[in-house]
Every structure is written in structure tokens, then in C-alpha cells.
Length: 242
Figure 1 (tube, rainbow, N blue to C red):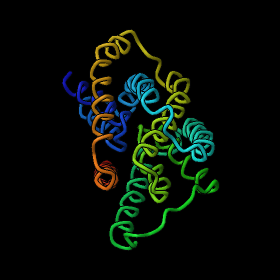
Figure 2 (cartoon, one colour):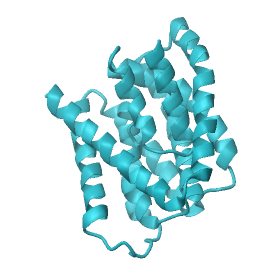
Figure 3 (cartoon, rainbow, N blue to C red):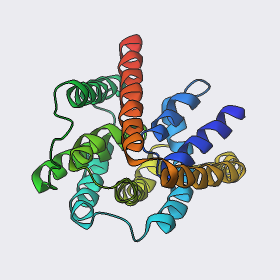
Figure 4 (cartoon, one colour):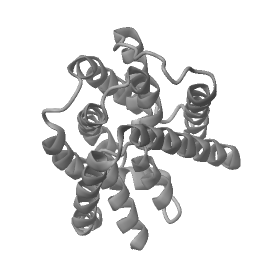
């Protein structure tokens, strides 16, 4: 049960404004159950945390990015649903992990520290937004593609966090019907969700508290490091499973 508590708290932290860390939730539960069951079981926790996250950041977001990323993310969910039995989780994990690692290495070693911010790009936004929706559907792992697109824009940490919370709230809502179709929720699932709600809410408020108090430079460095760690974990898991 304690792994469930940790996973719910981690989900809450991500919804409070600390992106990437939420991707650890499914791997944590995969230690004691199948990844598919873990992803389905955690969706209600994500949605409950989303409600709090949106209320915290409802006036702090990038509208141009929302206009592109929300429909693209929902499209990605639909693609994930349609191809769920055709593409292995390991192949997706490997691809996304390599992309995340490549992005971090490029940012740390091959880009100028004073590089100007890039504007929102609708074409890139559609591609990376759909990729985020697709990988989020597979295992709530939408952060790497999303961050590859968003980080070069160099938004303020609050605007970045708010945009992230809203985009993934809509993506998670789009997953409700497909997940129910793949693995219908049981009474036991609902009972577990109710038990985990306090841990998720505590994580959400803790995440918001930390987001507002961490210096912007350290905030984005933390995002990049967590992206690298999670991406590395995805690659290792995919290689070990193959």
C-alpha cells in the first residue's frame, strides 16, 4: 500500500507545478502490478489532482500554446487508443527516452546559455503535442515530448507550470473513455482511489508551494534534470524488457 501512497503523492507534486516527476508514478506501481493496470488505476488520481492544479494556475498560462497543444494532445490520445495493440510499450519508452536524453544533452552542452527564447510554433506544437498525448496514453509519460517543445520558449516558471497543468488536464480527460474500454474500473479500484485522494491533494499543494519558492533558474534546471533521469529510466527499462 505504501507504494500507492508514494505514487499518488508524486502525481500530486507534478500537478502542483513540478513537471516530469509525475512520470515516476507508473514505474513505481509497476513494481507490484502490470504497467497497464497501474496507468488505469492512477488516472482518477491524476484527474482529481488536475482539478486542484487548474484552480491554482487558472490565470497563469500561455494561451497560444493551449490553442495548439490541447487539440494536438487529444489527437495523440486517440492515436494511442487506436494503436494500443499494435505498438509495444518498450518501443515507445525507448524512443521517448532517447529523445529526452538527446534534448537535455543538446541543451546543456551545445547551446548558448544566452540563447533567445523561441516563439510558439503551431506546426511543431501539433507534432510534439500529439506525441505528448500519445505517450501519456501509453503510461502517463507525456512530459518528455511536451518539454522538448516548451522549454526552448523560456516561459516564466509560473506560466510554464500553468500551461502544463491545463494541457495535461485535458489530455487526461480524453483518456477516461479509452481506459474504461480497455480495463473497466472495479469497486476495488474506486475504493483504492478514495484512499489515495488525500495523498494526491497533499502532493499538489506541496508542488505548488515549492514551485512558487524555487528560483526560476533552479526550477528549469530541476525540470531538465528530472527529464534526463526519467528518460534514462525509460531507456533502461525498455532495453531490459527486450
